[in-house]
Image (cartoon, rainbow, N blue to C red; front, side, top):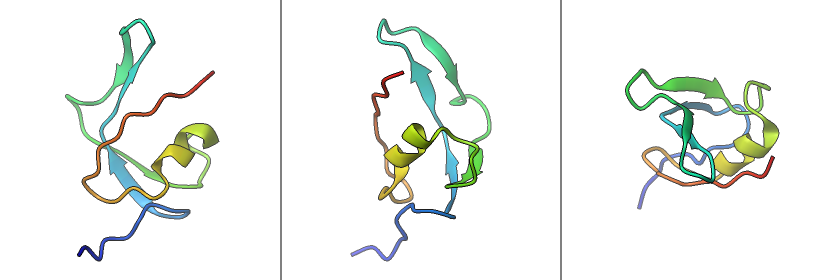
Length: 68
């Protein structure tokens, strides 16, 4: 059983990401660069994107689909 905290408001998160369009075209990402560090709820990320991270824990991997 893990005692890791789940991601919630005011949690600092370091992440690697790739943003891909429906046609498979990669439009942004940092897999070959340093991780991005953000604080959940600080307004840096769009709220719809940020909400996808809530409840995840360190080391989790996930795929999100976000309508624009």
